[in-house]
Length: 415
Image 1 (cartoon, rainbow, N blue to C red):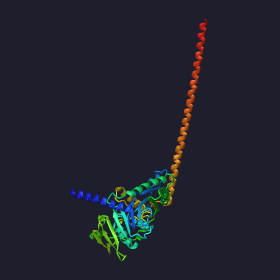
Image 2: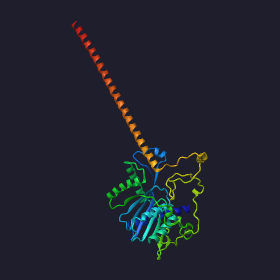
Image 3: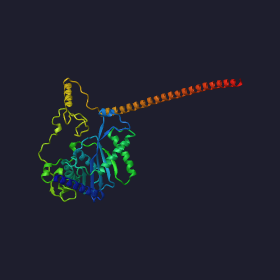
Image 4: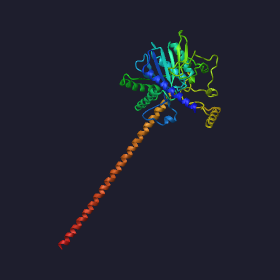
């Protein structure tokens, strides 16, 4: 119980410290300081439109949109802004975050910038040895600046990013109410048009920019992975560090890593970047027993995954074993298998055809409903007319009966 209480105390102390320093840096950034707050948003899917046909789901024809948001403020940034990267790459990995960071930093002038700080959550895509190799070793030497990696504890530090992600979702639904969004480029253009109007209406406030991003191949990304084991042995463990800085040395060709434990505290350990030497790369576990060739459009030559479809599930249920047996039987019988996924142009044509078919079906349903209502109206009018004619005839018969009774009464009175 004491250990649990101590952990909760550390968690909330970490939260309070990191939030206080972050708010201070946002409100009053020092001279030469450039801050970047990064976080992944919920992945979206395309197509979107005024009327989404259910067959889009059953045909497995939906495209995924990876959303990564950066909030940038500080030196050389006149107005802070949100930079949202939209991509068909599904990876939430340090490599993808590095690719986006490299593109983002290239959009700004670092003239006069002496310190660059990254703020993020403790997800393995930001607090990772691969990210440290880029942010804390390659970037300071390349750009001649000091860099910082600051992390919020679990479940905290998402205020600004979550608000922008929610706004992006509203803008997507607003754009989809007028037209069908079926491509990543079309989504980016629609969102940017709405963002431009927002920027004009709220001049001087945080600006919004949307970027359709196609990352370069993984092998071309700068930096390399540090050694988590060597870092931990020298007092800078990756999984337990919430603030680490890279201070450029006087020679300008190397850095010193300082583990501050929490942002703003004095460093408790100083060391040089640590890398494994002479260690063969480890083969991923999910590719160890892969016996089916990877199809185009899933994991390409650039090593980015662009679809959720996998050749092998994480768990092997009996149904999958039966399917695998069927596939092997078809191969033995030399039966040509259909492609696992149609080309993009055919999928888009199928989506548009399904939209037209759904629209025609709804029009026919409305037309038939109008015909039924007209028929009912005619029947009602005829029924009312028949009722009125019957009442008039009965009134006439009653009048003739009254006349005959009057005449008979007159005859009796004369007598």
